[in-house]
Image (cartoon, rainbow, N blue to C red; front, side, top):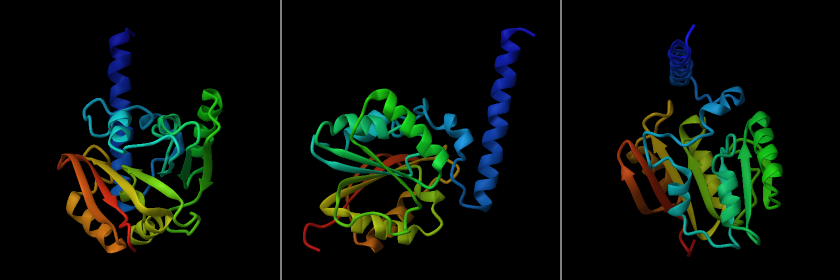
Length: 213
């Protein structure tokens, strides 16, 4: 069998896996399983909005900031976030799956980073310190969360006044969330819309916790 056929069969296999995950996700709010982490470890080549450097570039990070990478998965953003806030800053990698956190730990050790903390939990479980973080990121994660209201309320409490929640959504994700319901959820939690980047099917939105709360 020549290499072209291997590539074709490989692409077909990836398509089948992606379809199964999408169909399953429509019935249940399923996070990407850790054994499929390789599917989300790289930037999507078809949309700029979901690229790590673009998302991080919008955050206005400073070296002493504390950042929550909520639903961090295999750490596609965790490592560049940690590098961006070195040496005084800190990143918390939170994920419900230990398998995902294990991959992040391995990458953090290989990179020699000392400023990453880990929490195995689901958002909304009350595991986050209050008024602790300057930034929080949710990258194609919101649709996987069963209780979205509780999740955003916990992030709101975990951010300092003036802190920013960054939500990224792309249509290629099985749990894609449209702008309007995301905005309603964020506002219900107490956030104010601050910025919008991208387009309706691939975007990042920033929501700010008011300075006076």
